[in-house]
Image (cartoon, rainbow, N blue to C red; front, side, top):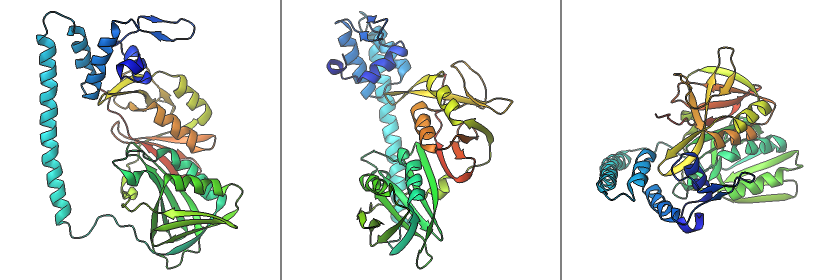
Length: 352
């Protein structure tokens, strides 16, 4: 069904749970979904609507009226969605044109990545732990190649590792010595090179990190790996982590992970892509718990469940502190013993 319709298996599961395209039969033992031949046409329509980014509520109505004798409703819904897309594109073009003009007029760049030569002495286990803590958050969007890497930022006796895909960000810190000149040195390491560096760190007590003329090299004893840095400027992550104080809840990582993994979820549709949300609240006794659909409250925070599980797995340690701001502020996962190693998850707006 997935191959014939153009809908992936995960999409078929999503639309089954959402009640949009329910299989003809479900195996009671394996859960395998079986679709009737006449459902293929409906699935192909759904696939096209999904690629066009039609909201789920409208998709339901289109499919409900697709085979009806009177197609006025369907045609009206299609025209209305096309009009929204055209209006949105026109508005977006105007805003992007204004932004390009601002960039052209700007005298100094907002973000710079100095290529100052530097040799850093870094703890092998410390750098390994930092890479492990941030790797999950790196981007894979080909339109944003600078995010497909781990950003290394050395200043004074500290080295930060940072990764983000826009929807989540992870920051870790480790000590670094031997930085000549005392200035700030930055390099964004492509993911394949970051993974090669991580493999080289196993068993290495101390390593040397060399940044020179747009190239980064990791030396561990008589072994080394290196390559070119990404040329684009990495976002100024320091501005993105200045968050107001909020409610805090300390959690047992293993127990909280199991609660998220097996707990209630909400289905979310975003631009034709469906995924599962975990909605969290802080109880009066200071516990962070997933809440079921229908739960009410002004302080509920919804995040992508898969992203939350990734962040919990990468955090390390037995306990974490969750920091909740407003429902529109990122959820912060922070180690109790190291406030400088943390991850941020962008919230998802809950709609009726």
